[in-house]
Amino acid sequence: MEKRKLTKEDLDKVRDIEGFPIGSDEDIIALSDAPYYTAYPNPFIKEFIEENGTPYDEETDDYHCEPYAADVSEGKNDAIYNAHTYHTKVPYKAIMRYILHYTKPKDLVFDGFCGTGMTGVAANMCAHPESQFQAVLNAEDPDIEWGARIPILQDLSPIATCIAHNYNADIDIQKFTSEAERILSESYKECKWMYATEPDPSAAASTLIRQKGKINYTVWSDVFVCPHCGSEVVFYDAAADPTTGKVSDSFACPKCNAQLKKKRMQ
Image (tube, rainbow, N blue to C red; front, side, top):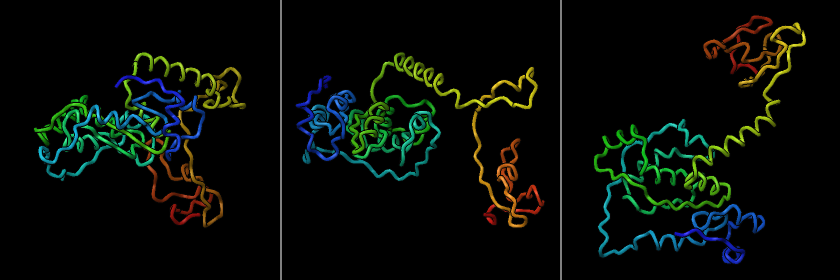
């Protein structure tokens, strides 16, 4: 489908549909990338399906597929998955298994509750699988047909569809990289003071300790009350070993030396 330039008249056609966002027409149009993405109920879906889909014909349809019966487990440490957090998010590689099993290349795949668009990512990645992942799936099912499926993504949340669109839209990688580096650079200049510590006032002025320190990460800890002496116990200081990263089940109160357990403390 060709790109469309939206007008206020286009918005008027769907303005009364539930889910139409609150905002100025100018901002809604600016966020949209019609016909592939609109920041409001997309009026082009019917046209998109007519152009790309195959009408169902009961007499000629020969679709048959056995149920997918294997267990599916995929980790959540993938770079694509972690690019943007969202509740109830599913790793796209898990979705790929179902799409590859039940569909053929160029089939339409519809997700009416798309969230950040992992179903769309899965449909598109069927044409660009990671080699190791592809080898695993080919070993499980030699009859898999690789190739892109055509996703249609929909959600009531405008922010969800915006994220889904940017996950799945074709982009200029060099332009994206340049813009991302610009934003990071400006953010660093504006916010770097929040990630620095003041020098130790007790240190000699000539030592390196007088320089500001850079905070790589901050550890938050619970503070409990010792049931024996009533003193406060910082859980991390008392129970964690910073060299190994392990936390002991029992630990000593730093004041009265009584043996303590977290579940017995307030």
